[in-house]
Length: 319
Image (cartoon, rainbow, N blue to C red; front, side, top):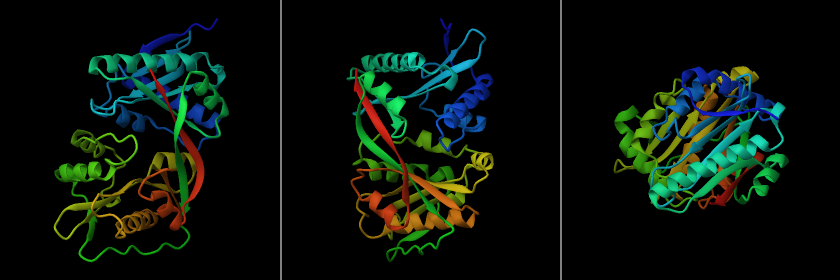
């Protein structure tokens, strides 16, 4: 019988082992992503993460890390769904530890829901080509309810030029001093989207601490009256690119504020972001999109040359 020890996150000393585990799982599942220690450090410093309560590690009798799980629980509000991510080393597969990770996530979410006086719901994702994960989730009582596409576009192929409506200007965000209007725009953009969770100014300011943050990738469109109307935030992970020997960038966040839609701002911002990535030497752009986005995002991406790579399925379970 495998002897396991579950414990909370122990700080900086755990980062290398966690990154190694996540990368071993990604390689085994043939996923084209890679996690660095610096990336984990930034993620765990998110103001919304309770590092002692929301992270768990499983070690074998020799102290080797073989399992990892993390919760993301939004601030108290109308939508209190919790999200759990978990990975188990390929050498220790077989559902036993995966089910322990799910049970821990359920227990943690019940605890939070009881404190808030709300119903508990837990969410988890699986790629559509991971049949074992999908079967595990369904055997544990989870139901699929939403689909998200991972898409890519070559930046070697020609790009159209961004065309902004008359009176609108494109510029870079001016750092933390503009966090409040940017966050207001972000929340007004996504408030009518599925499973919306308000972004806080505190979390937005945390993004600026990322060593890979570049102001030239943080674009905003300003309306004639000075209001923040649309945004495109791009991202390059140089460590991941070096690991895979590729030149890949991301359209991480793209949106148009309510009241400014259907006038071409989304397309203009997307093209502006793609040009920035191309100017930085990237050869491919990637993004993720809700397949049922209510404002035609999927159609926009397809119209400028993005194609689907795979689908991520969101599962939920009412506790």
